[in-house]
Structures are given as structure tokens and as C-alpha cells.
Image 1 (cartoon, protein in one colour):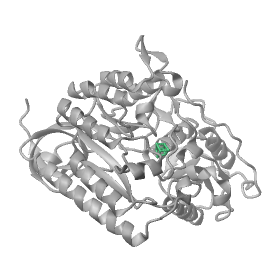
Image 2 (cartoon, protein in one colour; image 1 turned 90 degrees about the vertical axis):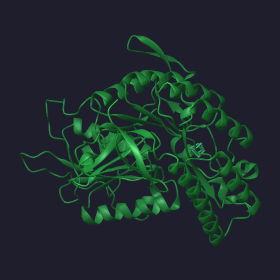
Image 3 (cartoon, protein in one colour; image 1 turned 45 degrees about the vertical axis):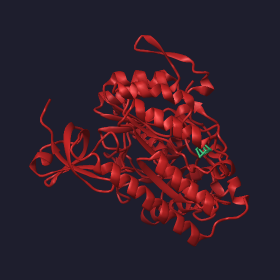
Image 4 (cartoon, helix red, strand yellow; image 1 turned 135 degrees about the horizontal axis):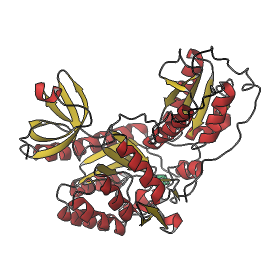
Length: 466
Ligand code: SF4
């Protein structure tokens, strides 16, 4: 069953008892949005905007033109919280009428103590409450035609790729993370719901679906993998069955936030057949058994290395992306060296690395032996250099090969795209310079002969058509 959005009422306070704004006759009410945080938060923003657009609101990207501004906050790290508070402050200074939602909205006092004048505060996924707050601040124009929104909804990402959220929440309790307390336990959408949304996105011109959740491999566990009907047949709420069904749409499917559970082996044949992109985003976070234990992450690094080896045998062009944390409380020099050696052995293709930070409410804050900031920086530098060398060698080996590239941007100098190895925003790019690149359009999928490589990016020219 799809998790329904919370209908928590918008709390009335002196601050949000501001008079309702009157919109001049003849024009639609306008809403601005500032969307911070991860792709999951971006999907929430898109859902909110789709609902508002359906009610006749115009969406504007300027503070000046907006009758009210929504700030969708991120509350993951303390630095992200500060960024959210700054964004709220800017929206208040520039516009004055501000509605706050998102992860940080789960703790209303932390926002109101800094910005008492915000009109309302709601937590993540409280779409109905945000829409209600906007309706209170600026009533919608009555419009008998509700067909203002394409079935795919409104998207904040470019038209040719879209994030597809398959579940919310998480059953793990990693000690550095407060997402389960903000978003609750795993709650999966039915396969039918996900597939209908994906189908509408494909019909609207989307060429790449980025499947997201907190734990994609756990998809459907809470539903006991219940079947639902799509295109006249039953589809199980389970990662393999969902990926197989998504492949019928004939567009790229990229999997994020996958854990290396044994059943992920089942995805390899789908990748080998070209049904799913040969790309897995697996947030390993560390490799040292002691650190993983302190993080409370379920993992056994030997089995993981063995699994990676078998996956690469089955799918030689598989790209593994991951994220890591260095300087976790109690991480010793030996733990860190273990991580560097593991990285070398695992040959992780793409990696992001964060220096550990305390997060309000996380149990890791209370662990002993916090690592000092200079040491964290030093480990981060060494990690990034090791990863750069792995990536440089891997990219160099791609010179002379032909890769499929999805074009993201085009200007008079050429085109910028991504191969199956590159997720948007976080990985590398493929550049096609000159007239042949400039003649392409965003959303085109072309074959490119790779001619040059740098640490993370590739350059090439169009390959002859097959
Ligand atoms: S898996 Fe761990 S880090 Fe990821 S959302 Fe769940 S608790 Fe947080």
C-alpha cells in the first residue's frame, strides 16, 4: 500500500495569523520554492508543486514575483541545517511570507527560535499540510479546469531525467543518522503506483529514471512483496520484479541506495541484458569491521569483496558508486588504512567522502574517541587522492571504447552528457565539443567514441551509426 502523506494540521500561531494575501484581479497566485537537500527532498518539492499547479497556482523562480515562498529544508547534518536556516532568512528578507517544510521541519522549535515570523512549519512528506498552508496564505484562484498538470506531475529536474521514489523511511538504525526518526520505518509504494508514475514520466519525455529510497534493496519488505496489477498482469513489490517491469518502458533505469544483500545478485542478469543500467550506488560508508560495528551497519567486507568480484564477472562494465565517512568516532589509523586498502581492492569506480559530523539526536554523538578536525581533514585528503588514482586509471582505460551517452546540455561550444557510469550531479560527464555536439539536443542518446580522459570526465566524438 502506498504510504499516504500526513495530514497534520498547520499549527496556528500568532505569526501565521497574518492576513491572507489578495492577488490582483486577472492574475494567478504565485508560489516560489527553494528546495534544499537530497534527491528525495527534490521529489517532495515536485509533488508539492504538482498539487499547487493543479489548483491553479503559478510557479515562479523569483522572490519578487512570489506571493508566498516555500522553503523545503534539509536536516541531515548540522551544516545542512545551517544552510536551511540561512535560506529561510534570505526568503524572509526578500519576500517576507515564508512556509517551511522538509526534514528540518520535523523540529519546529529549532526553526521558530531563529525565524519566528515563518507562516507555518511542517515536516517531511506532509504534502497536504504544505498545500493547506499555501491555500491559507494565498487562496487559489477558482478554476474549473483541473487539467493543468501533465499526468507525470511537475518536475524540478531537466525534462529528460527524473527521480522515482519507491519507498520512504528505513528499518536500519545507523548510529550517525536520524533519518528513521524523521521519516519512520520503511514504507514502500505498491509496484503499480511506482510503475504508473514511471510510465507517465516516460510518456512525458523522460529518458532516464533514477530510482531512489533510503534502502532500495529493501523495497517491498514491509508489504511482504505484495503483488499489484500493472498492464494487466501482477507485479510483485520487490526490487528485481520492479526493475524488470521498468525495463519495459525502454528508457534508462539507474539504481541508487542499494545495499549488497544476496538478492541483489538477481539484478545482474537484468544489467547484462541491458534492461537496467550497469550502475549501482551502494553507500558502504566504511570497510573496517570495528567502524562498521560502531556505525551499526550490517556488512561483512570479505563477502562484499567476493560479491563485487562476481558481479563484475557477470557485468564487466558495471560501475560501483559509493559514499564513505572518514573520522568516525573511534576510527584509528589502522581502521583508516584498512579502508584505503579495501578501496584499492574493491576498485570502487566513483566515491564521495564526508568528514564525520555530529548530527543533533544521533547516537554516534555519544561515542568515545572523537577524531580531531585536522586528522579528519588529513584522512579525507588521503582518501580522495586514493580514489582519484583509481578513477584516473579506470577513465584512461575507456579511451578508444564506444559508450552510449545521454545528452544533458547543449550550447554553441558543444554538448555535455553522461554515460551509464555517470549519475547526474554526483558523477562525471562526457563532453562532445564542436559542431557535432552543438547539433544535439538534451535528451538525445548517442554513441560516442572516447578520445580523451581526465580523472572523472571523458571527451569524445560521435561514433558512426550502427
Ligand atoms: S540505512 Fe542507515 S544511513 Fe541510511 S537512512 Fe537508514 S539509518 Fe540512515
